[in-house]
Image 1 (cartoon, rainbow, N blue to C red):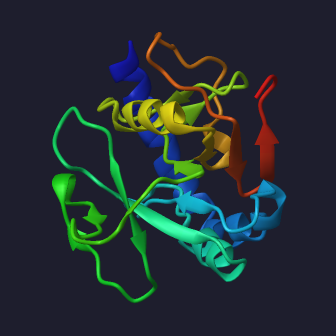
Image 2: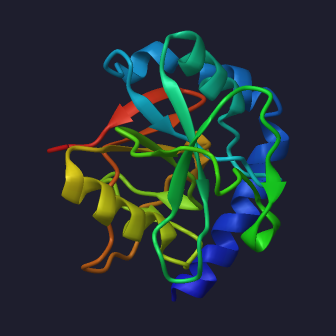
Image 3: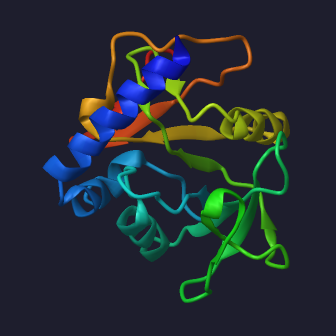
Length: 186
């Protein structure tokens, strides 16, 4: 069931990416609405083609005084490792050919985690890519202290119900081109 849902969600996201070419600046315009505490470490990501792209949001958050960390896949089945990123530092293709930091960069423990997704629902559940990287990462980070998970999505990626499992971590909010949406009880 999830495999079919992922295929449908990817197709929908591809259409949305073409329909909203100004997504990145519209998303960045809502940076202050996230109400991120001063000097927080924000874990971002480098968007894949068609994925909701947070690069201008990350620039706005850096300009507001936050540190930015980017993920690196250490190995299959493990949590992501986040490294502090400085503007201008080159990223290199890593696992899945996604641009990521070098392992020698300082390790960071984000307070806010921007999470890519294929779909989300009104309960704060997200449909990821099936590798479990973000659920494992949130498990580790939240064991060390509070971490807010912010889904980054096109507003049209919301679906009625994302099938969930016990190991799935809820999003605290989602940020789309339309603004911030906080989930009940989070």
